[in-house]
Image (cartoon, rainbow, N blue to C red; front, side, top):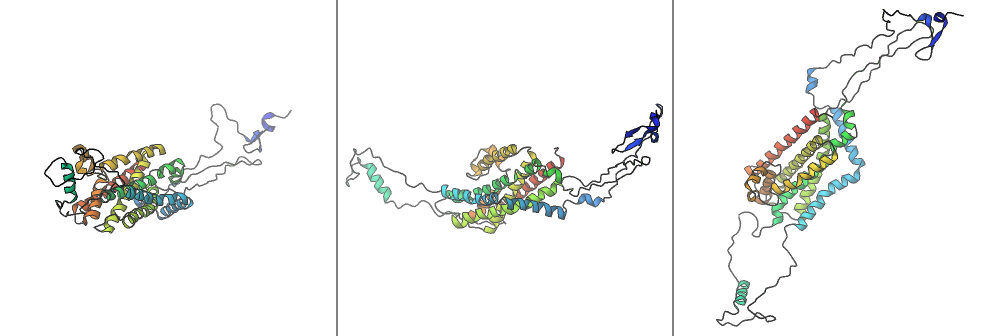
Length: 387
């Protein structure tokens, strides 16, 4: 019988037979020598300190903007609905709010006269029909106690008073609705994680054996270079660019229908008003991005976005002046994003004031500060939030 140690064969790693004579059997005191070389170390990728200062990369931004634009083009129904929504909201406001009541049934009850008797009286000195005399006097009165106002018409119109705040609110919260779920969608679909993979070089050592020769170690280096390396700031900026285009269309629709279709009063510069409305829409976009970065689910984002709608409408002086609020609420109201911008737009449209007025440029400054706050919060949350 042949010797088992020299003649027997065992199965190799890849299905080839290997003789035990070629395998060195070690003693218990000596550890077996490794048959393969260790995995070679990773190559050091040279980088300069200036690479850390680069926030945007041109081809990254082009690809991300193209991706967002392609999504909007493929969802043409959603795009049309998004642009048409401010038209309906402006129409509902201008047709339903601020008009004098019409078709009311009015009657005068005079208990001085018996029922079913007309209110006719003679020119005597009797006071039995005093009510009838007073009503006749009111019908022919010539007294005019009201003089011409400094700003606005003699008969105030609530539509013109509330229109600036409503226009800002429509653009602001439509922008919030557009952007409050963008980062959540990217995160839930896995797009965010795939885009945030850093450029890295990996090595894989593969050992191959030859059946007719002694085991030969061959190292095959396979480099996987992940080209993307996209940062969270680039993803956020790409959404700002694409959503800004839609927001400008919405702001234009609101101003066009309010001013040229429903004749909302415009005394000052329409260009200044348009710039302020676009800034408020940008503030709403950044607020939506901050909500999207803070929340972990779309349900929480919807709750937070809708929950802030009513406090903004009630406390920002949109339907009632801030001066008529409680002193504590008045202090809080001045720090909300839409308070100063509403007063600014009302001064431009109703009073004709320009940028030289503190009440006008204060709204621009306040809106710009809130934009920076929301953007900074979004970037920091994207950078440091786990998961």
